[in-house]
Amino acid sequence: MPHSNWTLFSTHGLVLFHIALRGDSTMREIAEELGITERRVAQIIKDLGDAAMLVTVRNGRRNNYVVNVEAHFRAPPVRDVRIADFLSLASTKVAVA
Image (cartoon, rainbow, N blue to C red; front, side):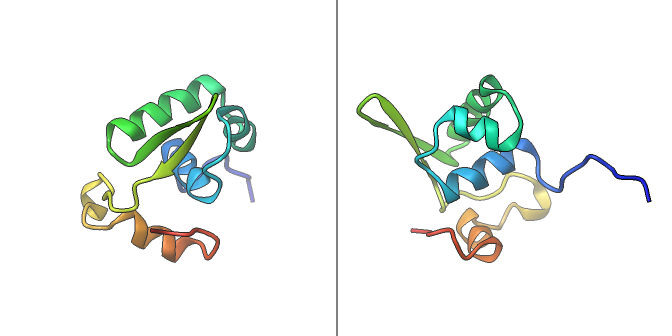
């Protein structure tokens, strides 16, 4: 059987999920974990912030990222699903507020 190179989640979804698990990660750590560039991570974090799905909190010289669990997904089939509901189903490691 041929190996395909696709994933179920987009890079935006993967970054959001990574941050939900480890909000104190740096952009470099996120990029290394997901196999994408830091520049791509920065753009995704900006996109997620613009969509009110993510909040950036300045902590000294570092940024920490917090998922807005009250936000909803944007795609029509899951538009009514809150991020908190998805995260609670997807992982027992995620603490939702």
